[in-house]
Image 1 (cartoon, rainbow over the protein chains, first blue to last red):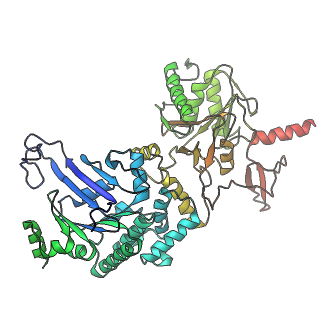
Image 2: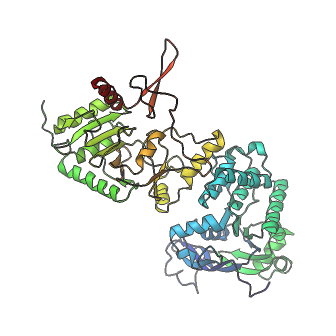
Image 3: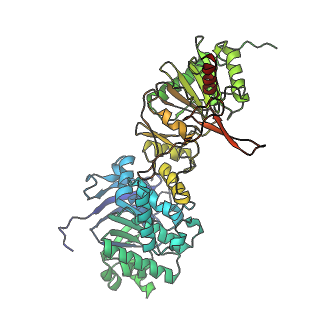
Length: 281
Length: 281
């Protein structure tokens, strides 16, 4: 990849801690932590100095065991959660190149509605379970400024067809759907405003294998067709191998290794990554 | 037992507190100002919000009119009128033109209001986003960030399910392109009268402890979509069976014996005034 190319998303020095910290753990240089947890004051350092760029059209994989800070990081990027410190920049014509973590709530909401989409691990967070599937997609379109029912309905039908929700069930609420279908509706919703950045948090976890393959195909297809940049979080290396161009490995809130996906999977450097790859094979 | 009440039932401090909330409401059109809703000799949810506004504003020179669903003579209207009359001694009237202070339940009178008049509407549910978001903390945040996708989404859902917007009363409005407001359960027919009205329109929700206002000559727009414009109720081919009026809000009355449907002015004062003027001519 050309290093001079402009990234679309830059995350710098993201810190997220739960708790105020104490003398034993406040200094990042010599913290006495049990994994990411300070036994003295109970502070959890969920994300500790995370830095990465995402380039246009690229899929960035994020792997790590549960509790390593993957989902917290995603929630911070989608402004679901306030960060402790750090900065996020989006390089896009529709947004000023400012640190979005420091921007006003209104500005953040604008970025979220216009430039981002997110698929949550649990569809309950990403969908309104008792609104129709079409309505769910319209919600994102309305938030992005659309006020034309016909257009929104057509767009919703087009997207739902794309994720293979049968036409006769489109006016049904996701509460009546299977987990795989809910996840697909969520993907359709996240895609509805053509976001340049899509965040996928464990999208295939808990789905059976055939549905998993379906969803992965869909993501790959979308990325090829629409050249959307994605951050894909998973603890499943198979998913990462299939989707991601580059991968970062998280452990205890820190990035311990990053590089091309093939490189990481074939020639892991860090002991933890080696163990991770080993246990896959 | 004969208890000496203060003028207009409340002590002066209470009235001042309610007026202060009202002033803030007038200063921020459409914004729901919280206030300390008082205990009243009628139950909450029976017009206490409106009544508190009326009592806080009333002076010795005022002339009061109370309407309940268009009628001056229903039990609710009469009781509230009596309470005001007994605790203040001010004159009451049925004649819209003569009144300076009009308390109304769910109708705006047919006779256009004037600069010297104040209309107080009783509100059961002041929060237009409540059906979409149950948490008050979150709805206040949504208002602050002007995030009204939810209000539009609820209308969108109606269109998807039934082919048109199905709000009978309480169709949400946006005030001066800023706050989205519940107009209290007035029929859609009356929504049009909210805009650019000469009188001050006040809204009081006693149970929910909120006051809000539409000052004179304010832009008020009913929420709608580009391809689904807002439509008030129409009574095109019918006229009042008593006074023959057309183009007013009608009650539909089913005659049990003949099985026929007849229409009658909902605003009893308007109907009576027309009949009286005919008698004089």
